[in-house]
Image (cartoon, rainbow, N blue to C red; front, top):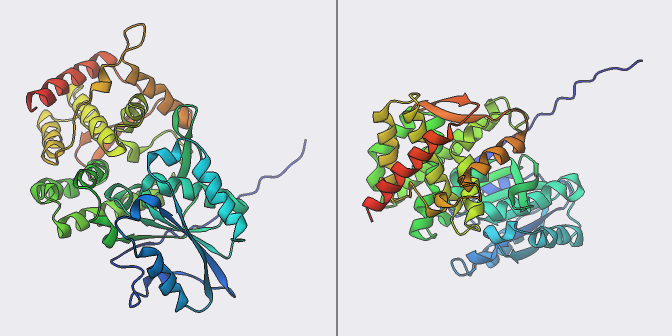
Length: 384
């Protein structure tokens, strides 16, 4: 036998920017980010739901590119967004068809403007068209600006499982335009803050202290406080991806998915009527209380986390936790195996040791977890 091993090293540049009014004529951020090679083309996808909030957005984009040399706007396409866009491949194929129709190549750009689910679908099309074209993301929601928009994952749902089909691809750039942030419904903006709470819990205790101290301003959606939370959260997420040693999740540990094993299953069990932010809120509450119950986390620290979640007017329990299979086992526990299967290897769930510090465990005691669910049910129903 003969052969030889080769190490192939690839370096990615992950560009995260914050601005307001990215397509204003006097804002040079976008033009300075882009490289032009001859007449590079730009294809823009916008989530349909933004049309009511920003009826002039398409015209602003057209005017912006009319003044740029070396970049040609080929089209602005409005497509359906939200979680429905990920439930089948219709939006994905519509985006792929546009990439082919307008001859978008690797020297061109795909812009995507919308919430996290829409970014996932269009990002998957950009990652697979020509095996990858340059993608610039413009997240519009709290959840996408403080978390998923700066991530490197793209995909759609399949076989009843979230993100079963997809690809890892580092976007060319991410532009968090705060102009979009404050137009979302109030409950949507608050729900997105759970990802900031989550990343603070697993990476930065001081950031969690800051959120706790400013929780009333965050609940009131004070613009400056919300923007600071979003920016700090986004940079923490990007820093972990860049410096955490496993950007494409080849290992078995996913610190940024704290609270997500139950959250993803709850979304499925409710046919995605429970939003991702609300589901993560319940998942974080459950795993935090569980860590306290098994002695990993001080009870007082767990209570601080639960109070922050409740003060943000986010849920700590949902009735879908009550669903059971024919054997009487809670159906949410099927999420543990799906969580493990998604990466392979042994089950690895991160639990809190203290705020800002997590530890991996490889099993969940369902009896203790059941007790946590019941306690949180009582807590939730007592405030109704």
